[in-house]
Amino acid sequence: MAFTGDEGEMIDPKLAQQWIDNYQKTLGPNDIRAEFVGFRKINELMSQGKAVGIRIYYGRDDAGASKLLMVAVAADEANIASVDGSKTFGLVLDNMRPCPPYCPPA
Image (tube, rainbow, N blue to C red; front, side, top):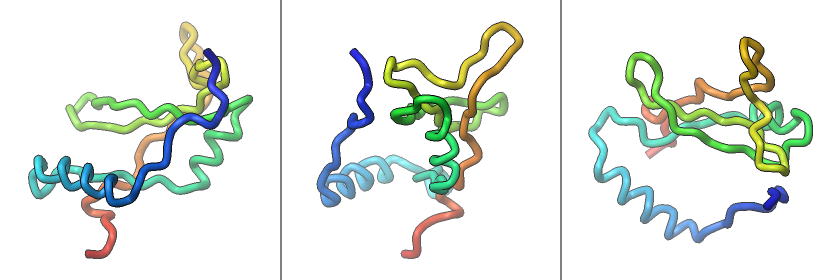
């Protein structure tokens, strides 16, 4: 199967808030609740080759901190960023702005 760029589904904000609340009830006061990424960085990812979307990976750095990593994806479902031997290709987005401390006003 190939990606078309129309994958995903918009859901009701009320349901989204319920799911967010369910998750956040399990967190401690200093745990990351969300990440923010600017549209220019998303556009930079999407401007690579024949990108039709973005894949978001969960990762962990060498210090054990959780990370979200975004890579552009082509219609054939392949990541545009890759490692081939000692050569790397494409962009991987990291270092988004976590909440806390970058949270929406209460």
